[in-house]
Image (cartoon, rainbow, N blue to C red; front, side, top):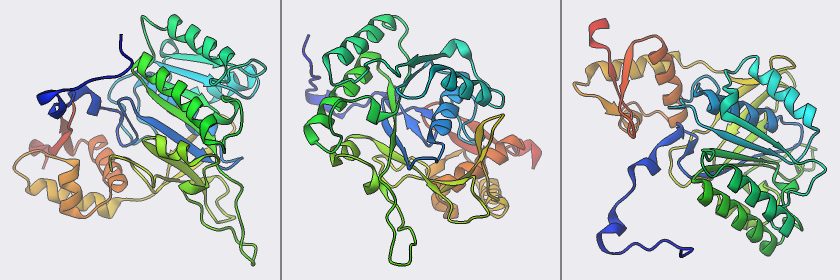
Length: 327
């Protein structure tokens, strides 16, 4: 069995329809490898766990990003004590619908799960064998720096780690979510933090260059909003990923993030535009017609759908239109 895929002739120009489907609309697509990055104390683990819970139940992430169907999730945690991890999942599940039958947690603190070592490869082989008949659709590795051996600033070490991540993705035919940290914030002469970017992701540039997109959590620079974060996505291959969302952490119980922001004006524009359309149209067409970004458009569509003012059809490509009987 060759360890590569060969396409010849017409096969080069044919795409597999299912590989363009969303696992989480505007966030994760089939076989993506994504990086969730944030400085310490930004609750990126809460963000990742909430995403895992929503995936297990097929419910909207952050209450506005659609998950078309429930999927099985394997969450590999390389830090924190077992009961601490379970407690966070429990508190998150008090708000987020969670299908426990679709969720598996692998705790590795105190064990050796460094993927670029012989012991780590054996552990991965055990998981591949265990889930061969029913592989997970999404695998989380939380966090990256505890899942490899060596220095993350060395290209060869990062390449060894990413080779095992790619092998896992290929064996399971799944998407992979890597949870990672960024460099310590730098300050100017007035002690003000410089704006962060994807380049602040800790480690070799091979890590940034090898993923499909990077989701970055930033803190709000206001003392009055200590639990607010911005979700950014500068690095992305498809242009389909949302960015510039403001979210707020609810803690301690239930433990979850929710989106904040008002889109009443934009929502009215979208509804007015759709009212004039004689046929259903997709999100890209709508964005051009009303000059809205993808994030705002998803917010508007979510609210209009919940109010039953518009309808949605389609599988791979979602098409939207006004409910004619209700206008």
